[in-house]
Image (cartoon, rainbow, N blue to C red):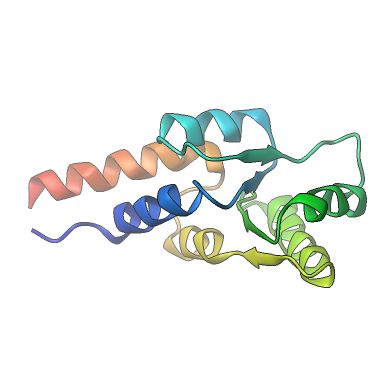
Length: 127
């Protein structure tokens, strides 16, 4: 039986999150990642701050971040801007998880990750 790739990628990022924070848009994104057993630091974009101020604050504490915004137009724009700002501050911006999920299709937001994981587990059981 071959494990669906999404399950492997999520497991890899659960482990990575133990040492690298994940940047998300909102509280519901945090809740979904916690339900998916992500145990490391998850930082919510503070809507009271500009993206510049937010990234500068995060860059004071971390040398690497995982960017996981939604996959709608606004989320795609935020991902690009976050990446640009973090790199300009010398912070490695890991976007592989975002890019993988975006290319995989089927979900429009971080909140839908639970559905995608469950669907992959069901496919695994049907093999």
